[in-house]
Length: 599
Image (cartoon, rainbow, N blue to C red; front, side):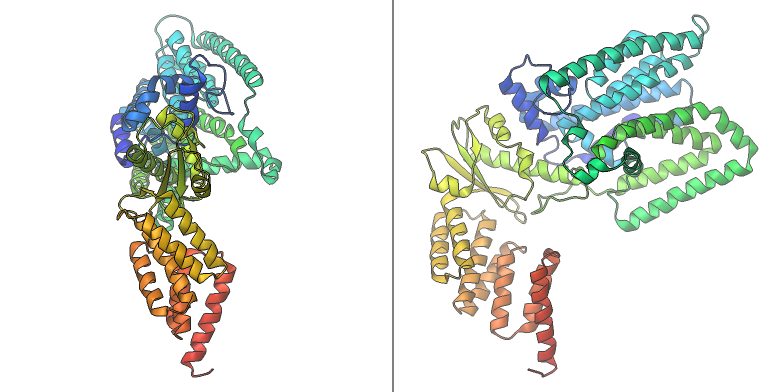
């Protein structure tokens, strides 16, 4: 079952650019390739935390593969997830029926929040915590102290929340039934001492590294004064709510599906409470499994407590670690009460996992999401980075010493996916490459090779090279249009058109036609403006310039209904634009008055 769960997770997570390094990955890769391979006692390229196994070691072993074959790394991470599930299953199988162990082992895998764990290299910090915790629990269940301690140390060096595993190990080791040897209490004490020594040693070294390397923790990065002032209990309750929702794959569902899933889960909960209230035998069975229920809930609570400091920046990939304990508690409770209740919970979770949206197929003009980084946003950013890398491989083959790259119409807030210049420098293994604005690329050439890339939300090729000079003239025309210098705008657009002839540059052609339509409306050449606007929207339906040009043309011709229709489309695209809303209201009133025959 855990192997099938990992396979299902892989199938539901796979897309063309799966495993593509982005954002923090480039910090770690840049540290690996340029800072030196002997620096283990720092953040590995980050200002936060000391996690040398998940950062320095992981990226030194796999850095070249991440860049050359990113999907191979994702496939390896799927294998790690399967191994973690298998270890949890084998540890539980010593005390539980096979079906129960399988259900609990698949709990952290068959969730929407698990998809980022196998899709992005940087999330090995969380996946590694799960993997090494599972190995440590497996070894403890088999009373193998030294291998369990080694796995625990590896987990702690992946992510700090593995201290929860440290708490669990003596209890798991003490629960093992043996025919000879030390009694359970003495065995637990030995494990407690060994684990305590290891955790204290790790904590001391961790603190020293933090101080000497100047590293920060999550709470040190808080800028929102309201968030900093929020009571810890409020932040903990928030983290619990987010973790519970993630454990049932609820946040990614449509409102209708989420409502149905909540109703189904509530039905299971009510049925369980009713059964326990009415059936003494069921209560006795649950009491017999009480330590598992309490232990699983304690794991979930402790793991979630470590996430209170990230308030209010929730990222779903943090949830699967706590879901290990929640799965144990739910399976022990429902399986003991009445197995069909457990089957019902498994069915609901399978449905919610399967119903979560597939990976987005395109990079959108806006990469905003409900969370700072959920699976959908992760995929869009990986696609953007992958398409950019692919376009540069053709437009700017290595070596490219001193080259500069300009990005046009990339989504606002998406450039952090390139970690500043580090993506370029990592791809080319050259620290002289930089991102520059279009204006700098054209007006300050400095003899450097310059490539401009443009995002095309609606085209088959989403990132294409475009002439920097053509883009500069396009932006220059925009300034002329704002100043109502229509003739100068048309001249700049003509120059831009002459400099870019790639038929695949559909976004550029759409922008060119849209701005030309605005300028033509400005000088009263309405018919030509409508032709250009139609061409612009055919190339890219989201072109605001073309719609504004159509509004201007329709108003000049007295076609108020047409103007209202385009203003409604613009208002849907920009719901917070108060000026646009007023313009729509004025046009609507004028159209109604026109239809009523009033002036």
